[in-house]
Length: 283
Image (cartoon, rainbow, N blue to C red; front, side, top):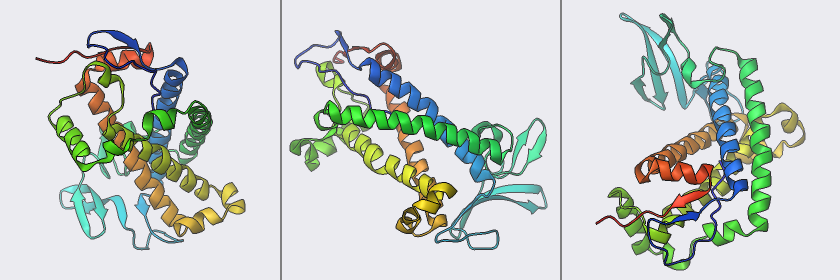
């Protein structure tokens, strides 16, 4: 998803005032990327359902040792879903491996409400995945070029030396844990935790997802085989792709939680209309 680009907010403005926060181009990219990312994630789960196991190295099949597996096994009480990571396994019946759909028991890794399409079809899942990838790739490329051209990354995301001090980071962590959010003009600027998380998404998680996805593509693999070598093989690239996507999901969950806790109406309005009301200090 696009990292919001902020409009300059003069210091010293008191809480309660409405200011411009996000440009139109940023708002359009944000919502376009929301649709693209959820299309990619949900269609990716459908593709994973075709072979719900992850391996390391170049090769992996049903009888090879998988480091992660989601499946179903027969028990005296009936089918039981499970998630196994290494030697550790947990029961996931009703959520993963075994779940109900219209009164029928289904034995696939992820349930229908998590996947795109909501019925099992590897071919359709791949079509949705490629569609989301094209939208995401084009929007992301435009966003990166624009962000470099107008110095958005350097101006808004790169932390100052004082922000990287342990005391400063620790204070921000404590404030977030206590749900003490910035007020006044400070609320329209990024704190150090936002900067570090956005930089990690932009320059670590998303490039990893794109590279591993390209490496697994048969067309790209034929001409850019070095990508798979970079990650240690096709199965390793698939595992890294899954891990990076899961990291992106965690980022999205935290992002949504912070929006809900800090004032969803104000935050959503700023990403729809660009207008943001500076929060007043709570007494």
